[in-house]
Image (cartoon, rainbow, N blue to C red; front, side, top):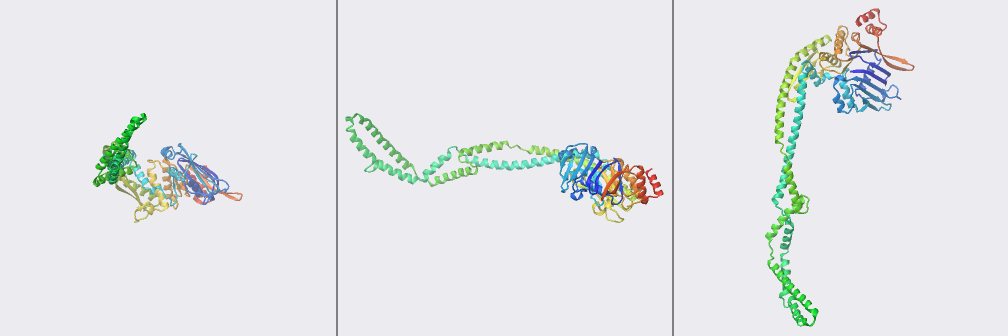
Length: 550
């Protein structure tokens, strides 16, 4: 609930402070005195836009501060989510500088405007003409029905299980996605592994194949060259070996005449033998080298396979391919089968879904049982508030898929006039009708759910007499369980105040300022009497005001 509001340098307000009652706070004042300005200031700490034009003194910044007791609202998760220090007393502050820049704070921590707005909506329920009220919100409508149906305990158990169910459902989808991804990746790895395994690569195979292919593709040249070399060495008329043998014969005849010549002669003889051996090798290689196109094709295809695999796997030799093959084998062994996990989780989810549907059925049955009661009570209360032809119909549709609140979709249908078409509240209710409908519905569930501070802006517009008195009684009853603030021009409502503030304007020098004061009993009598008969009030009005206050 809001404890106090501090407004500095806003519009025609220089500085005011309001200490609210925990129950019913009433604000009255002359037309144009500044009641709407107070709501405008409150709107700033609820995240509404602002600019430098709202400043009373254009050279000073505007400050709006709201102090709230949030012990009953269970907001710790909200504060943790947005990384804000939590305390049971929360201060919302808005500052607007002369340049028009705006800053927002929660407990002195700077926050973005959407966060301020989200938090303020949990603390203040502001009802103004043509506002979008939470009475139009499907989630809040369902919340009211659940409050009347005493579904709190069952719904808490349902939500707890649903949270686990939802978490498991997401986990199951993740496992399925992972399993599908693994299967695709495994297929790819197995394809690569099979390709390498089928190739049956040998460590030195590439060098051998390349050497053999080089020999076969040059077979004719090798044969011709070696044959010519053999002939030149051994078979021609002027063969090299024959010439050397002649020289050897001549040297042998003089070898005994010189000591150093014997060794040289032995070496020369060895050279002849070596050439004879080389000539024989040339002959053998020439005779055994044959052009084989079929073998060339076979070798080329094998090497093409090796080159393609090397290019694919970004390596330059067979050793690198064999390392990749080993790595692929290890990777395929590392993949786990998620089938058992998926089957187990599917079974768990199925059991949780069955349990949730059973609980949802109980929730739904209780909701349906309370619809007639709720519709009847709202109709009775609206009749008392001069809306005797207004009707509220609760439409509950069954859903196929589970939601965080069960299997029901709740919509409030409304018609303000006799014979009018029932339709969603947002499309058919005026601002005043919305406010009265909100007053009736919330007063019915006030004791069952923690509502934020409810602020009504002239909810009594267009009513007087007995209707205003009945509205005052409803407001007073609502304020027993929740903090209510009402801006009113009706004395019957003002008389029910636990705290009564009066907004007024005063001229100071050349400027007009708006101010607020808390009325004592004597001042309240005077204000009520003026509201009853005008200013100055009649003696009868004063007497009536005394009676109204009791």
